[in-house]
Length: 135
Length: 91
Image 1 (cartoon, each protein chain N blue to C red):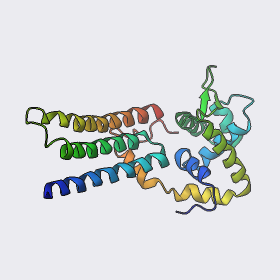
Image 2: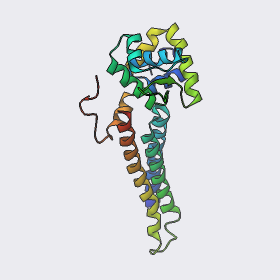
Image 3: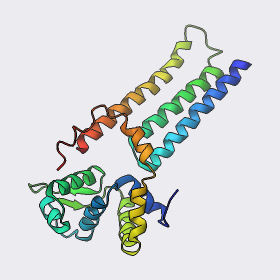
Image 4: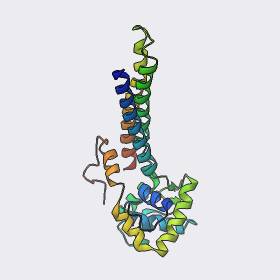
């Protein structure tokens, strides 16, 4: 396995939750600034990505149990993982990403779980409607 | 004797599948794999029960053993349903 010198916890976290650099950046942004709730346009502005893309990443991270949707209207999110292990893993990931960015990026692109995920996704009977709701 | 041997081999294959799915579940945290692991473990259990207990059961009661297998199949269906439900809410 191409672990690129990452700890098993970080590897597991990346494999489970992160499939793109964009998602990683969104996660790290929300993790670094937990003092406020983030809406898609604000994330988009901060990271200079499209609003639709930011909204999609936020929704995916929420589904993964890493973000909490705030009660305020307009779909604001906060970094608040359900599992304490994810909190530690995200902290470790942030440190690793700051120190060994290339290793993290290489690992995300190597996607060791791709085939396993492909198998699981084969059981989705109605796949995404050609990215209709994807910006 | 040969039947018992083959039953054991099939049971081992089921349990090996269950362990693989368990590993996939631990790696990907996809619930579908947990359902599959449980289903295959139950199918292995069915084989074991069929060999150990089944021969002592009369033909009137033997079909109860298949309830285990039914539960295993329902678990697979439940896993697929859960996967689709999760996939839809993720969009």
